[in-house]
Amino acid sequence: MLTKNHDKLTAEVQAHIAADAVIQGNYWDGLKGCFIGCLAHSSDAIILQDWYGLPLPLVRICEVIFEGLTQNEAKDFFAAIPNAVGRDGKDLSRVSWQFFAAELRALPPAPEDTQKVIDQVIAGVDLLAKGQDWPDDTRAAYATYAARATYAAYAATRAAYAADAADAATRATYAADAAIGAARAAGATNAAIGAALKRQRDTILRLISEAN
Image (cartoon, rainbow, N blue to C red; front, side, top):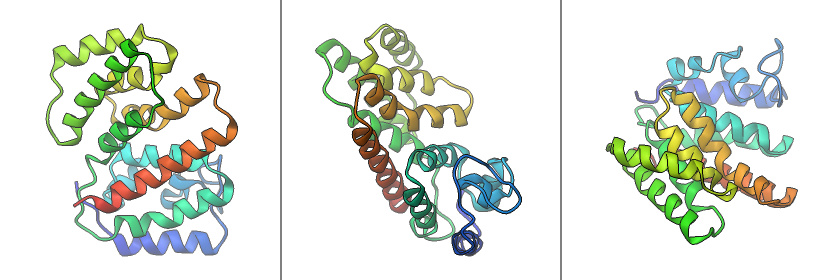
């Protein structure tokens, strides 16, 4: 799957920004909508994959980030997507795994046994980000281990389960939610959670831009 119809994507984003039609919390009401709604004019995220070659896991990550940002930040994020995509013919299929690995690396320091779980999961996700396989026996073992780990290992648990999920959109939701869930579990302030969301925004835009 490669990106396509980039000119149309750019025009649609610019038109919705100009019409002040970008909102959070609602897919599409006929005039305004969210990240998915403005580009699909519905709640059907698969349309963005069919029309623009944006993989569904990536769309779901972007939607989660979009909904977590402040209103103005969300609009700016939506506006930045066409520039990050850049052109037709880019392969964005591995971006969701690359994002996943980056989020795991962004976790705060954990106890040694918990960090061991996280490091092993990072190694597995790195393989997936390179288009390689994460061996079934290793993945299953660390999914079980991580599930028994402390809540600080929330992201590792999600990562291990996500790698075994059949539904790509489920994997993406886990990826975008992982670090934020860990921050909330650790009692992070709203400011810290906001900073984590901005980091996610910057990371996903960079990975989309760097993709070939």
